[in-house]
Amino acid sequence: MNLKRTFGTILTILGIIGLIYTAVSFVQQSGDTRTVITLGVLGVVFFFTGISLVRTTKDES
Image (cartoon, rainbow, N blue to C red; front, side, top):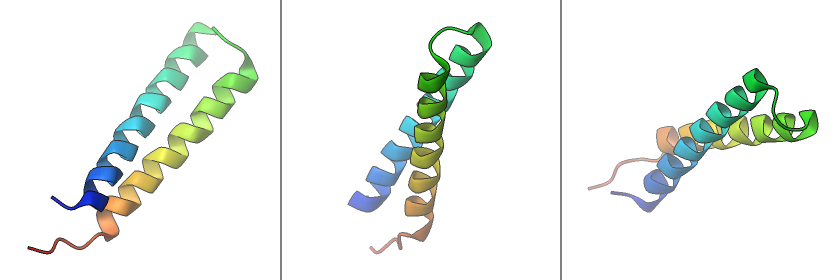
């Protein structure tokens, strides 16, 4: 497996975890609003960066 694809998969998983954590914090209203927004933005950035990295990397074998 290509190293870029592996890194993209890791970024995507981290983004999903960040988005889920943000959603849970938002629903439970636990934590500062600034922190929840920051985690949401980071989750979105990681998720879309990982997806685009996996999508654009060619599979050479």
